[in-house]
Image 1 (cartoon, rainbow, N blue to C red):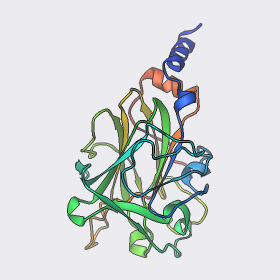
Image 2: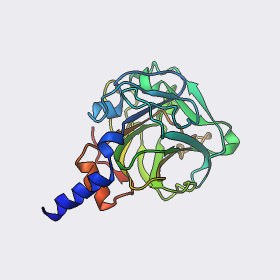
Image 3: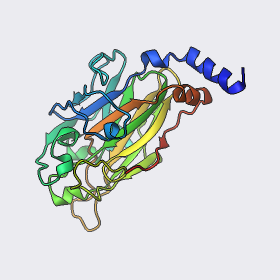
Image 4: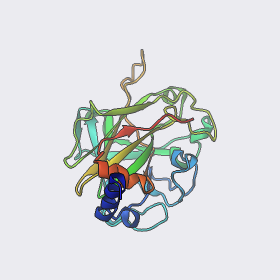
Length: 261
């Protein structure tokens, strides 16, 4: 048995990924969604239609996977503040906007969103996803309002990492930018225009996935900087044997996925 196969076998024995990993679909906001019009589905990574309608922190046992099965260990904790000083005690709130002028966001995962509770708490919003089983995951994140031309032109900086301790400073953890250069394009999710995607690995018990969104605003805009907004987050299991191979190599950092369009 060669070394690669030995390492892969050892990883599969140590990590019962096939039995415990699950894809999680998070739709931020009060409007429930149960469809497949999302970046992860268009990419062929997500297949189920059981979305979690998330309006705030979620306790372990309150979420389901993409097929509607309970996720007893997975929980969500939101934080708000400056991108370099996130406070997980700060609150968040939701909103739904008229997206009729922007077909891509007229319904589904882009229809509503979650953001910081009060302006004094800072512009960035962060999310800790705890309790994920060990393994490799792709993520797809949308962060968009699009209820008027100014909002449709907003850029959003996306940061992500994995850690066993709460991440409060995301400033050096950037993985991409949503530029919204095609906000009116219908039925065509474009990476880096409409969403950011990446890959991360949970390598040990107690390690969590952290993601943050911030908007630096627009040049000459008196309302800049803008707020960070989360519309949806898909956390998709990378199929074996790729997952076991990555974990066997101990790759725990977040990696930017290649741009797709």
